[in-house]
Image (cartoon, rainbow, N blue to C red; front, side):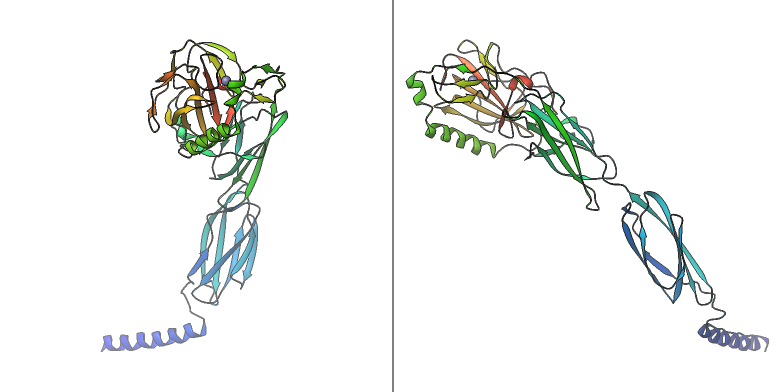
Length: 380
Ligand SMILES: [Zn+2]
């Protein structure tokens, strides 16, 4: 009997509770809410946050010292503060039940990046542009030197560390004078871009014109047809170049001898002829003197050409290549991996040469730079 009465009472209580629920009083069930709040957002920018609830509610929102009191809307537009701030939302239903949820929003500042550019630069020098990207992660969109876009690679390809640096190698054009603009664009995960600029001072150097006084027979080799054929062979060879640096140590001199003609010298092949610039460094040495690879790399091209003579091109990755002209003998073949200091050929006077010497070039993105500027130096 007692049990039955108890059941009856509880049934009555349930019915009462149900009607009370329907009327909104005696409701003890807090609302369930769900919010769309990102953990990170760009600081200083407007941020829209949305909430949804299991029943009609009023929201109170507190963020970064500001409060929005008891509003019925479920959409808020905040101004993101820099750094970590709590965003606390309180939803209150018609019966006064509250649900409080706290989020943390990190306001991320403009993409931070540091720019390190080679300090010493003369016309024809290689230039290294290093962009260091601390947290938050940003990416390098472009690196330009004097308006020219440079290919980039991750610095850890050289350093072996887990660095957050991106490097580009370039060359100061021989025609450069005054300053050369370095411009780097970085972009953060929110799509914000930032441009970093540096003006690279280019030291002026006076260079006397060198008269080569070539014979008419020798000049015959300098036909447009020969030049174009050799340039085309190089362009084709460069298609196989590796994007990341293959070297780990400084570059070395490829042969022992006497430096007879420096890089960048203006010269005339014949009296009253046009002035052109010497694109490599000449090292005079007896016929047969060994030539070694200036650094680790992969052979891109070997062959005999009317102007360059016995030519070997080695790709060092990262846009850097070395070229060896006028060789008498070549002992490597395209596709072959070579080590720094490994013998690749012998000094000769093949092609357009006035005597046995090595014409050595160091190119960055196919632009010739001063080879001697690389010796003993670990770029980037
Ligand atoms: Zn030369």
